[in-house]
Amino acid sequence: MAEVIKPKFIVLDSNVLIGDYWLRSPSFVLLREFLNKTKADLIVPQIVFDEVVNHHKEDLEELKSGTRKLLGNAGRLLGECGQPSIPSDYRRTI
Image 1 (cartoon, rainbow, N blue to C red):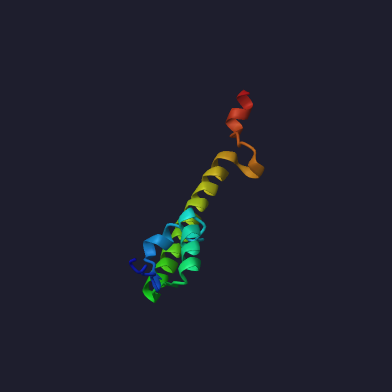
Image 2 (cartoon, rainbow, N blue to C red):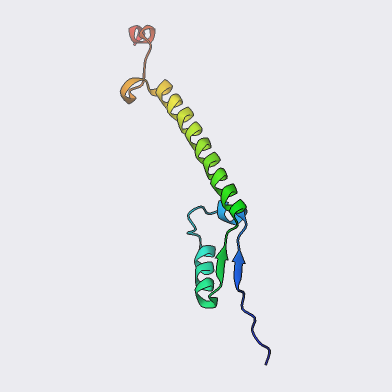
């Protein structure tokens, strides 16, 4: 019978981690189970770690920018206290 070769190391690339920052996807559940069964070590090279951290920061900045824009538009459309603002010229005609 052929000997089963078990991996000693699993090395992840940045695109895998960027796709699921919190490592909660079904793929990561399977990876954790695999690592436990095989006793393999998970390796994340420093360059990959740095790239993921930088990409996460960029994603957060994009989210903040989009949120600011959305809030600005909401304020413009809703006026103070979430009430629709009606210019005084329109109030006189109503």
